[in-house]
Image (cartoon, rainbow, N blue to C red; front, side, top):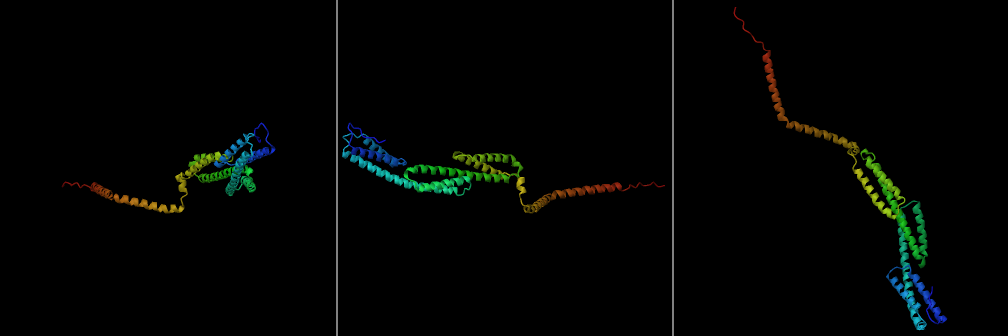
Length: 300
């Protein structure tokens, strides 16, 4: 891939070797800058490309020792800067990947199934690779760690949502005794089972949607608990409560009767007086009817 300067005459071997060496150094600089992505690395790429074009455009007159000496120094400075940046990038990226692996370990800690065990194995493999990684393998290792973290987060989210479904199932079991809620309960059961089945194959995008849907089902289930019928709620009241409230109800009823009787005293007295008068009149009339009438007998 090395390009030699155009010239009507071939330069001497020493000059040709020096040109080839400079082109090789430019190739090395480009490889070092390849995984870097920031303003400084972009600037170095631009400068490297400029030096490469200058080398390619040299003619026989430009191949003086002075001209090559200037380019050699410029390329040497670019290479030193690129190496320094690559080394710093290696340290920074390695530290970043160590932190990422630490996050993966924390996410996996509460999980205990075959899939999480497999991810733990992958994590240990990446951890060992990181201990001896070199600059050229760093980009691929970074991608592997990113994919591993993504899979770990998906597994953790799925595990969390399965836990939420477990809570919903317990709530629904607790309200099965209420026949008045049977239709709504059946609907929630069907929706819950549908979300549970989707969870097994959901990707990261569908998991975000499922989180919202499962949260709404949980809210509806909790709301259904508070809407239980009066009969069910009363059936759960303690016997001691009823033993305490029944005498109270009797006392309230007795008090009510006493108040009604007190307020009805005038009417009762008027009624009694009326009844007494009626009785006296009836007695008098009865006595008058029962007394025989004496008819005087004429004197003989």
